[in-house]
Image 1 (spheres, rainbow, N blue to C red):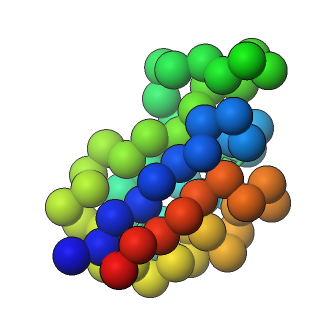
Image 2 (cartoon, rainbow, N blue to C red):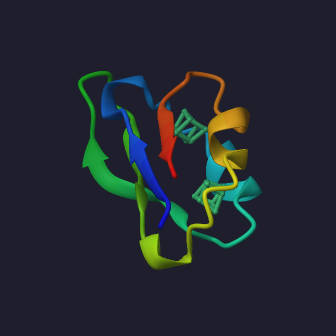
Amino acid sequence: MAKVVIVAERCKSCGYCVKFCPNQVLAIGKQVNSKGYEVVESVKPEECTGCTICGQMCPDGAIDVYR
Ligand code: SF4
Ligand code: SF4
């Protein structure tokens, strides 16, 4: 089973990962990091296939994918 972990302090809330996840696993969440950005969270973790697209799209290296 695959799992995504967001490094909250690196997220800039750009939304690329949300847009490009083929399974709509990710969404901008309510947690705000120390830089004032709303951090992405996994809202449908059971739908994650571990494709790593989100991690490749993130310009800030804020997503780790475990398979
Ligand atoms: S690994 Fe793929 S399926 Fe899982 S959250 Fe990232 S883009 Fe979506
Ligand atoms: S692509 Fe990276 S920086 Fe942008 S919202 Fe997703 S986790 Fe945050």
